Amino acid sequence: MKSDLRPLIAEWVGTFTLVFIGAGAGALASTNGGGIVAVALAHGIALMVIVYAWGAVSGAHVNPAVTFSLALVGVIDWTKALTYWIFQFGGASLAGLLLFYLFGTDSNFGATVGSLTMTDPLKTIVVEAILTFFLVTAVFGSAVAGRNGNAVGIAIGSVLAMDILMGGALTGASMNPARTFGSALAAADLSYLWMYIVGPFIGGGAASLLYDRLFLTD
Figure 1 (cartoon, rainbow, N blue to C red):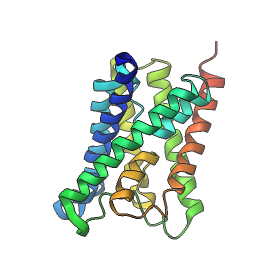
Figure 2 (cartoon, one colour):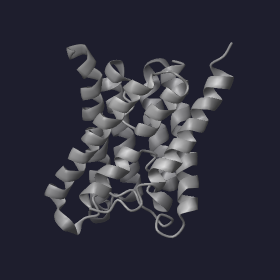
Figure 3 (cartoon, rainbow, N blue to C red):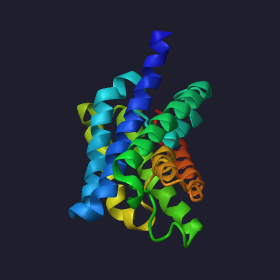
């Protein structure tokens, strides 16, 4: 039982870390002058640290879309994916509520929203799908295929930062339903969450199928 809980706790702590650091940086970006660069670096460095800290324990998915993508091609089973999702959303929820406690109601809690979120749901989904495609491709190339050795955390964290630099102003560049959920829960507004489930799941699923069928075969 103890060994079964370790990956779940790792996913909980890892997702909490990503949302607390990433959303916290987003909430402070308008007041400390850091802007999108600070937000991208916070997310990228946080994910890099998470991969090195928890990768050997749980795979450091910290993202329901990543978990879905791995389950879709059989890297993990669906029962494990379901338990990962529960703990990922649990960690994100606690991070969001803690940000609410720290920042009060005058903050957006680092919500993953951008210029397209409330004006064009279809474009929001397209952008999130493309960005998540890049992220999951990095996960497969670095973590699943093991082609980057000890640089796996740097590779995956860098893609997250890269995606935020491009898509942050458009959609918030979430690529992660749990990341969106944590901030949306704190703001008591889940109305746009569905776009950040559909987009990442489509993009992540496409990346996993492509990589599994074409690049993981002899």
